[in-house]
Image 1 (cartoon, helix red, strand yellow):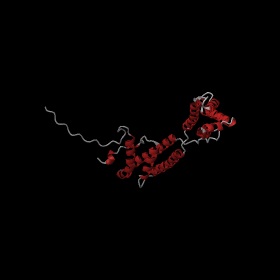
Image 2 (cartoon, helix red, strand yellow; image 1 turned 30 degrees about the horizontal axis):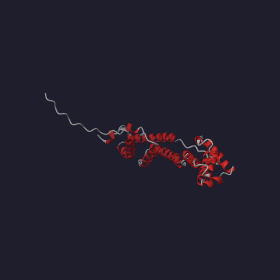
Image 3 (cartoon, one colour; image 1 turned 45 degrees about the vertical axis):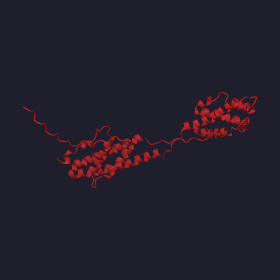
Length: 257
């Protein structure tokens, strides 16, 4: 029995279940494997497939070009650490005996001025936390608390707070206009469209083989091989693979009379 007689067209009437990047790769493989003398219908399906590939690649590329959005949690954590560090430093300084260390009195005063309710404001919503931090920085400026902080040795704490506060303001959009995210193409819809174009092309390959005989089957083999390879990759447990000729079983030995 010839290979053409064993050909099962139903295997090539549905595409393997793949993601969009794999469908794009399979589409390019099928275009490369296009028979030298395709039928008019197969040539038309190849043109449609090429158009679908170009659109899918364009949409997929737009997703890859989008800059990775900033992680708000990282900015929030850095701000929390900056304020928390100042609070803990002032708290430790203020624990010294006030009658022996005048700077401990200043540390206690700063602690009461900047953290009257402790660090609870760091648990607020992003916008509310920025407001709380902004009010504390304004008080440092208004009440001329910066020289006191510097005299105590807290310059690095204040510098870090100001750095983080700038990033925080940009994050919540109060000091810099937040750029709205552009709407990205629907990759699920693109996958479905490309799958339909692949299916149409596979149907035309099958039609060419059934109408053209052995020579057409030979010309379509590279395309079928590409489809088979992806079907095997997509099959989770060896199912949905192209059936092969069963190995003939050896005859059973005769049973004794």
